[in-house]
Amino acid sequence: MAVAAKSDLETLSVRDRHWIRWSAPVVLILLLEMASENMGIANFCMVFSLVAVFSLCFSDFPNPRDFRDWNRNQAFLSLTYVLGLVGFIYGANVYSNTNFIDLVLGDESRETTLWWSMIGAFLTSVVFYGSWRIGLIQGGADVKALIIVTLAFPSWSFVPDQMYPLVEEPLFRMPPSMVLFIWAASAFLVAPPIIFIQNAARGNITSSSDVKMAWHAVKRRISELKEAPISESYHSWILTEVIEKDGEIIAVDRIFPSRRISNDQDQSKQFDLLEELGLDSVWITTKHPFLVYLFLAILPMLLLGDPLSYLIR
Image (cartoon, rainbow, N blue to C red; front, side, top):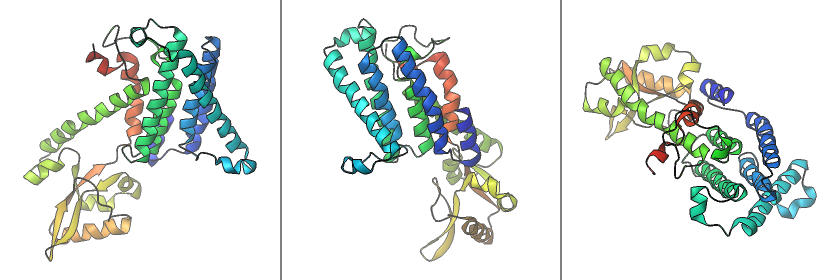
């Protein structure tokens, strides 16, 4: 996570091979722990259901009609899907007749509790993957990180006891990877007030239009941005833009970056037009990779646990 966060912060990308390389030891450790604790065939196979969801981030489902032409990777993926399906079917046959009150209270057997936890981990992975595909979560690296965390910690039984738990014996807890997401998202709620205070202290808020921008952007002089290296401009979006409205050329401040400015040439042209309109500074927002927040969220997750457990008591 640290290496991926560093890469995302510097280049705004993480190579797929990073996640694939690290998924191998994560899956191996989880399988060994399942086998050493004798958690049953169903739970052992459920690990592959999580691997199946993770694999969709990198490759499509092999077409059964072309099975004669499958390469080694496609054959391995197909075996993964089959083993995951065995985990569902066999587990449903063995553990479906469950007293859910005992399950919530922790009075069911370890194997039964783990199987239902693995169901929750599978659904959590599907939610992360689906959110990425429909655009609710923009970063593919963020989703891959969350799913690999789900592989590492499919339930709280795989997480060390928290040093300062918010609730000693919580009645209900979200899956660990979902808790990690919640802690990371909380950082985005803290950032806007800090940015607003910084803008107020620097005197950047002089109109009602500035108020809407000051929560998520800062003002920079156009002359400074022109001289800034390309690597710096790559890590930020320009939110002040020149448009034509009712036959008049005006400058507007956008909450979200415009897709019209797609390269350095467009950006340089915008700066020239803004200066012609008499502006010497513009609003910009820095690109904050969510993966960095996910990495930082590991600490509160391990120390405090699930923040929602404090509300659900």
